[in-house]
Length: 234
Image: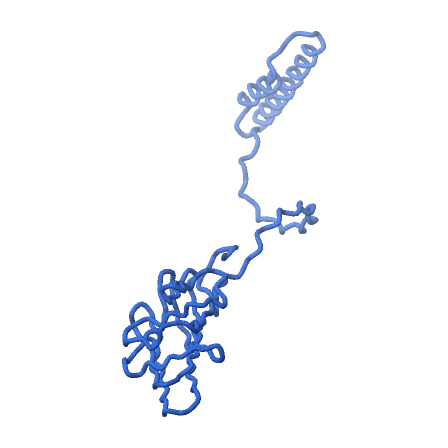
């Protein structure tokens, strides 16, 4: 037992002396102006450490500890610069109104398009006063309305969309001394390229009439558009 204690004490003193000599040599070398390897102190210490007995080395790394508590929230950052102004959304527009001029040849045979040739409003140019047809540019729901003056004969006409009758209207005329009137309208969903017009339904019911005192008109306007995901609609 005395021999073991002596041996342990001897090794401990030897390791301490080695470390002291290493440190002293490193300091003296630094003061003497000799150029050394940047990590020469660490290298010499490492050599002495490896030569030390196993029980004198540093203990093994332990298990990772539990995660600490979350720290307080930091202060808000500085306010960023103001961005550039974006484009302002513009609602799409489409509207027209036209009437049959006083000199228009009437009556019309069945199947013919009623041409409302005198423009009252057509800012977007969606209505053609030569063909009597509205052509859609802005997709969505439109309201179309017809007001007809009926005189000398009963009247029946159809509101057409792409060759199909959407709605039909009829007014009986009983040889009254003054004109009667027929009005009607409906909502229609259309997409670009669709056409809408007024067409005579029956040859014997052709009492469209227009004069300086009374008119027959065809109008339409966009109620709401289907266009989406666009900052500027029109």
